[in-house]
Image 1: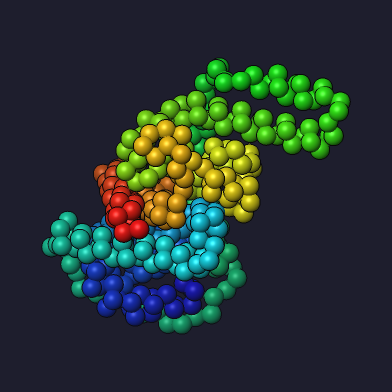
Image 2 (image 1 turned 45 degrees about the horizontal axis):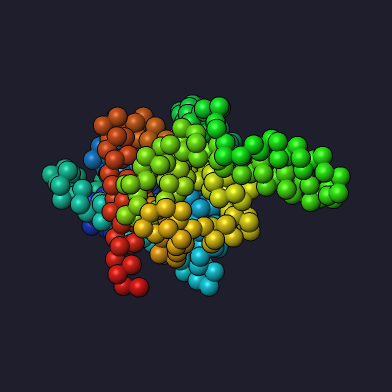
Length: 350
């Protein structure tokens, strides 16, 4: 599409609309790319000549719901919105776009209020793209992505893994290994039943280890700040693991809710566990953790909060640490406010 010369015309067509929220017509392409992945969307902002346009586009690009968030949406919508799945998913995407527009308007009137520039753009002639040029572009941009972002994703994944893996010496509530040994030595049980019971115990052990690991302690540490949103410490852990990559959230929930060590968004057992989960302490003890209201607020939080570390690294590469840090803070603050209003106002209305 880029080689044909059509993308420049798309930018020209969209300029009048984008200009109303303080952006350049060229900003439309990076934002559109954000629905696939926010990282190349941030990298694509370098086509914008004006620094103000680049920064503003970077700041709102994370609100475009990337494909990594989709497994979380599919899981939660399947569990709590079975009758309106398409409508709810569409609403999440639209809310992200609306928030991006509101943030852009706010930045236009505050931080970037005096930095408007006229629209000047050269429209290249239409061309037929060649396989050679397309392959070169693909190779160059693909290798660039891996070189710049691969190290950050790897580092963040190692940190998250370390927090969830250590400490190894955990005082379990029961002796899981002993119970597994007893089951394996019981000759009266069928092999299928044995395997089922052993798998259940291994899952319970992994869940308890997750709770008592460093990341579990972090989840309980942040619990007071997310309780007003209707979240518990397990949701807190899922949110923390999502800092590395949003798709990790589903796997973390599979372990925490005793569903499956390899759970995905289509896991029936995980959906069932989420529906059955209850608060074990506090004022809400005995009540369901996930209600449709909490589930919707959780999806909004996943949509808005701290983009993955690869996105932060991309913003830092394309601008500086100041804007990268600002993105981490302000997106998480907006996510908390939106989820808070969703839960608290929704609770009053229901």
